[in-house]
Image (tube, one colour):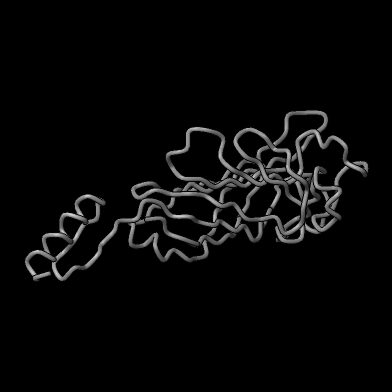
Length: 214
């Protein structure tokens, strides 16, 4: 087959298959989607209700979320304790590193402490349902992000009060925006922080792209 005929055959085949050919036969496919993992590491909580040296004066529960900016449903999340603490095997609250069987319980917080999400039990939530098993080191959320979309992360913690409304201690959120080129190699450490009338928090986490879909 001569060169002219061969070139014509390749161009027709490329057009039929929807493949873009650039000068020099370079193939430049555009990413369709990025698979990203968000890994929550620690939370530091300071309560205005705790005096210096006072311990276990606040009982918290909360949720960590992550998703693409186009999401219109409840975002994938990790739950730390529940508001009503139903089926909590011990009265009151538990420490952050208790056995996973106590995952639904409220967590004690003293004056200023840093808590490790790898050592406390969480459960995964999808859409509006939180029905997964309580597990330790369950701190990852995998999301899918299309070019042009941002990544939304958030952390919310409440202080449980049996005789009054629960106090909002942490309501931190941030939208991360990157180009497609940056998304291909996304790998970094981040922090969310926020203060309210009842407390302050800082949540540290990592995000990295695990694969690119073309």
